[in-house]
Amino acid sequence: MKSARFLHRLVLCLAIGGSLFLAACGREGASRPDTGVVQTPAPQPEEEREDYMKFFEGIELTESYKGMDHANPLMTQSFGADPYAMVYGDRVYIYMTGDAFEYDGEGKVAENTYGKISQIRVISTADMVNFTDHGAIQAASKQGAAVWARNSWAPAAAWKEIEGKPQFFLYFADAGGGIGVLQADSPAGPFRDPLGKGLITRQTPNCGDVLWLFDPAVLMDDDGRAYLYFGGGVPEGKQSDPGTARVVELGEDMISIVGEPQKIDVPYLFEDSGIHKAGGKYFYTYCTNWQVDEAGTAQYGFRNAEIACMVSDSPMGPFTLQETILKNPGSVFGLYGNNHHCVFQFQENWYIAYHTRVLEGAMGVEKGYRCTHIDQFAMGEDGVIGTIRQTLKGRQQLCYVNPYEENRAANMAVMGGVECVPSDEVSKNFGCGNMAVAGIHTGDFIKVQGVDFGDAGPREFVVTAKPGAQKEGVICLRLDGPDGEVIGYVPVDASKGERLEGTDSEEAALANQEFRKYTAMVEQVSGVHDLFFIFYGEGYEIETWQFQ
Image 1 (cartoon, one colour):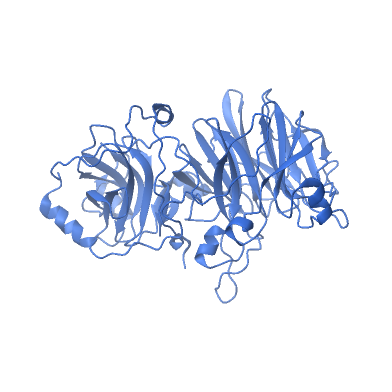
Image 2 (cartoon, rainbow, N blue to C red):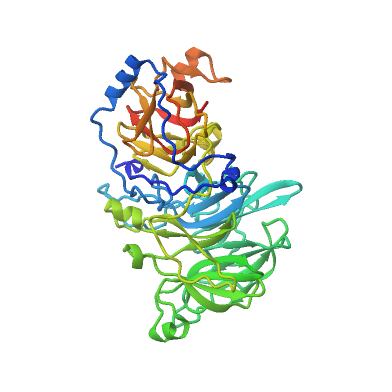
């Protein structure tokens, strides 16, 4: 089975109105989604439209593993674990351990050993519902940026302006043996290795006795100073006080440390350092271990593998235990496992990202492959968070999608049957960057939630696509559901597309099956709608789309 066929059902939207949210995504003055399709004659020739309609008669949508009203998991075209959020500009970037199927000698899916993971997956969003797939950073291994590292687990990311330019830093764990750092000029890379070795190793002072040198978290403080938190593991007989958490100040270059890492006293620590700041206080969050006894629960209130929260007046501590904020996801969704999280703020809202085994459970695999969820919570004025509710429904949409701008096809709320693949030389060489929707078969689909068409409405739809060997490729555009109102059809084959500016000659472009521009007339539509792309045919790829 190919990874693209995992999926997906489709999220019914929770869009919320308001010009404040619309302005954040570049659209102002839109109404609420209470206006329908304007009843104007279809601009597409009727006989041509009828021909395209026949392609879609009786087709079955690809099976979805994500419910119609679910925003969690964030993506289902691939797995992603140990999520970490970085806010940059008007977007949130989510970096995740690149879980991927391992197979046994008979070709069956095997237990996830984590030992083959060398990629870090990246997605981003402006509205907290539609996520853009940026691919997978080739972080570790001989094919990655850090050739000295074998694995890349549990990433953490931060950015800082250095010499007048924003620089992006990705911290990752080389299994449990050390922490590396990569650097880039953009959030999605390409990333380079500025050190050629680990930032934190067994030779780092006060780190030799840390069982697991992994799970970094980074804090950019208000004064411009940065701090790195890491560590984990339970020495024998020390389950209540493992002593394996560390914090150290980062240098101004973000790729060095200042002084020696200091111990953080953390009760029943297992792994998963987290850090955030609110109301002038510093909150250190972590996953408790699997050896919490009755005495520990009576004293601290938490149980095995839950996310606990400590508070301090200083980024270096000392920290005092405050509360439990997240139960083990297995207690909510079934399928217990390690618990890994990140707390972050975006557009004045507080969120927690965490991983579950929901996707593999829906697939019937149950071998330890993880997917990422995000839920919203309220931060109390006193800094108390409370136990955060874990849901499949997920979050409200913060702003609408502007259909009159060029949109990446790999930006979606839900999908069925497709995958995302590199679409340009940078992403092909480095694994991360601009991606295209591919792996298309008849019945596959994607959904873009909360698209604001405004009052006047479009007349044309333009898509850049790479035609496949099968001539009859057609995209059906529907509103508000996979069986909703049809507003147009777009044929995707080499004979109908227009060669893009700057590409090879027409003959070479056809021979190389390059991306081409396809334009189709559409019925006029106004207001806010969910936009569905239903696919017929196979072998073609979709890179961008735009209404005009």
